[in-house]
Length: 121
Image (tube, rainbow, N blue to C red):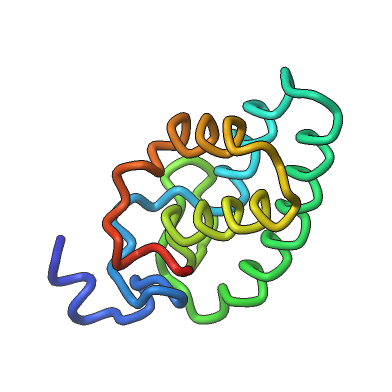
C-alpha cells in the first residue's frame, strides 16, 4: 500500500503534500458537513453552504492528474480531508461564527486531533 504513494506522487494532497490516507473526497465530506449544519440556525447553514460551494469549486480545479479514489463515491480527488476541513474551519472563523459552534464543528469532524503542522494559521 505505501508503495502506491512512493511511486505515484498524485496520491498526495496538493495542499499539504502528505499522503492521502483517509481518501474521503471534498464532495462527500461536504455532504456530511451540510447534514451537521441542518439542525443549526439559518446563519450557520448559509455560511456552511457558502464555504462548501467555494471550496468544492477550488478542490475540483486541483484534481487534475489525481489518482486518489474516494472510498465513498469512487471519484478521483487530490485534497485530503484534513486540509478541506481546515479550509472550512477558516471560513467559519472568517464569517465570525460563535466559538462554541466552531468548536462543535471541530469536535464533530474529529478536527481536534489534527497535528499542529497540518493547521494553517
